[in-house]
Length: 60
Image (cartoon, rainbow, N blue to C red; front, side, top):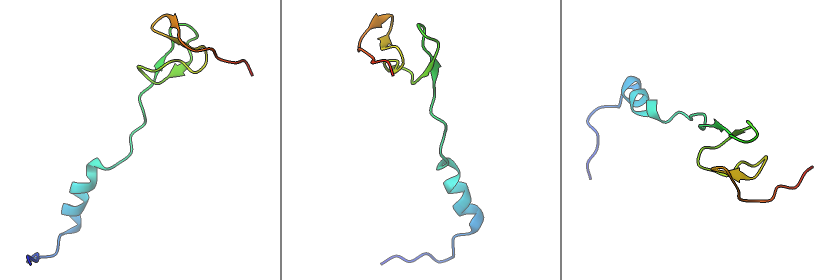
């Protein structure tokens, strides 16, 4: 069974993990109500997607 000859240094470990950080999800503004929404998704506030009413949103 292969075993590492040397201990992996902190720098090498941290360099490898540099891409593991969480990123803020992208958002765009709805063209109808100008609320922030996820791109390529139906707006949860007004129910429109690409200028068409897709879902009915109940008012709270």
